[in-house]
Image (cartoon, rainbow, N blue to C red; front, side, top):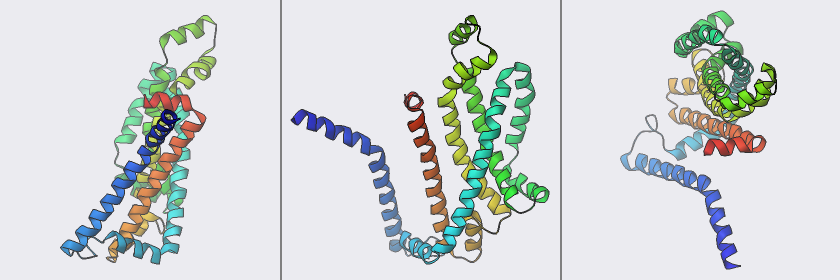
Length: 265
């Protein structure tokens, strides 16, 4: 019984370590932050203490909740559109070397344009509403997903491709029975990056033209030296990014556990 109990305790510690260690590190960071601000007497408008940030955020929690909902909507819309466009585009790019040579330069050109510089032009073209912010989010998020998916589609072992051809599988069957299953770990790597970049893109869009959202709240709060409220919006934004990233991880582990194990390996 004792060896079994020790083994279960060891497995429990191993399972909890990825959660406990980062949580303790974050708590330690906030404690040092709080003590440092109080010890050096730093004014709140320069660097507020965590307790001041919490108090200011709770005081305006209804407003912050509304801004969080707006930003979350923009993130998810941009992320979903990036999936809808990126996956077929990756299949198209890998379908032929000529297509790849034609499409890749355009993708690199789009990616090389700073989105902060592009956002005002999109506002002029699409207006200052949700469409421009979602477009910026999509443009930031789609490139890593295209590249990761295309890499996965091309990484299928040549012997499997030759085996499928020997069995007279069509190109369509090769894609869905060999290339796509093999590319799942690559796709989820791209999805994780795309989700992270979607948060960045949403904030960039809100910085340029918005009347709501956490990015707008940060701009508005700093304009009136309400630094605690700006930090509160920033921390909520960070927490939102972590939760959305972990949501992609959970989907991968639940529906494609073999891919998650291969990716960790």
